[in-house]
Length: 640
Image 1 (tube, rainbow, N blue to C red):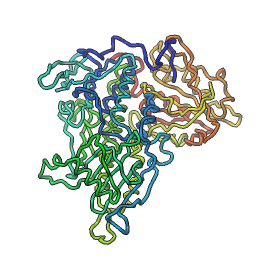
Image 2 (cartoon, one colour; image 1 turned 45 degrees about the horizontal axis):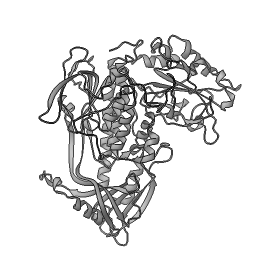
Image 3 (cartoon, one colour; image 1 turned 30 degrees about the horizontal axis):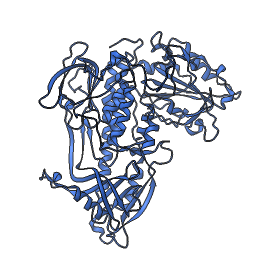
Image 4 (cartoon, rainbow, N blue to C red; image 1 turned 45 degrees about the vertical axis):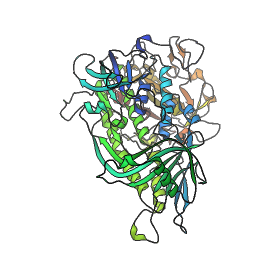
């Protein structure tokens, strides 16, 4: 963590000086750059991202009268923990959360089918997917971390509770063309209007923002009920602190998820088919029925529930919005979106895949840096078209995965004494879990070739950084102080693009291609660092350049580094010593081998602000590098 670049100040180094012009924590302004509706996972991440930029005015409203106390989502995928690291929150998250290490599988006992017995176990996250585990933590606590982070930024950004958005209209007039009709204090409360440049609906499955755009969630209910409850209980079930998929012979199935704190556990309990003609069937279930059903499924083990922290019954169904912004098929080709939806406002599904909250937050992480780039003048408004284009595809993949996994969890196990009855072999359940492991860990996303993602012509230079996938962090050693760090962990949620230059090495130990690239980036007018960075701004204000040398940190001193890897930062123009690294470690595989990077030729890896690999290029591909950024970056900072 770096701080003091603008001078020494005592106390919490994360608490930045306040900017009164952007502090809307007490009053609601009449005009804002971005209005965020909803403080769920998507709204919290988007707001936290926007709060990083003190020049952007952001307003967050929430129709509920107070912050969430007990969240309904709990699974935090490995990919989400990586994202939280960019906000400086991963360590805090891991300290409080339950870490899912293994998943166990239970099925009807072969000799006494009325009982269950353990049939297998697997690592919850396959080896090599991430250095972070799958975590379980209260959604409300996770959001609280983000709100606390926001409150330390110059804008002192904070949600306004008890404020409901009624409608939003695009007048296409003026600098603030959107008119949002809001109400404070419930149905009989005061109505008022806020003008905005952009509005983002993160207001859930019954989104008023989505309704204002005339978009419906399309899909079907599966007429199958599941109960979910967070309980404090005593039990003889031996795997109560493991994630467990339990199939009983005829009592239904359970997905068991241990919760944070060491005592609480969540049970997803199969309640069976619903009569599609009985619209009230789901509301007649009681908590006692959930407990009784859970006991039957877990037989012969006992379950003594001491307290229910929360429970609900939901109907399995998958629904998806056809678009995630206010552009329609009839919109002019040069029209640019101004209203967006994210999270449950545009995709809903079952909870058992553990992806709803995670994909929602990734929606917001994708949109946040793009809004910031446009509002800060770094990119044209056309960049915002890529949000719906990229995330609608990902949401459809989530729906498809969830449909398959929900069916698996709702299917009875095969009875060897009655094969004609159908069902699913318990080994197949375990196989499907393993097969879907990459998706449940949050790594199912792969962006295809587009404006923001290049081709794979040069993928062989760094095969371990697949284009379109998230940048996998590997350890390196910092040259300035010999500190070993995860290279990907140095990236912050600050809207900057990452340029990772891995040095080549010839038979004489020199790196001529790397040296030429550093000279180009520092001195040439067509260098992205010069072409897309405002005059007078720090050379790393738009691009975060990192150089990774081969060999030991003792082979290259700070005095030998090119000046572009020692940029001046802050009002005091202090030197940033955290741009140059070497590959040699005290222990472990070096990054060149771990990520299959060519030692002879080196490689340049371009990474988006949301941590996805956009390009793998030769160190000599300077023209191609500039051409890539020219497609969506403004050559000069012009406020839009």
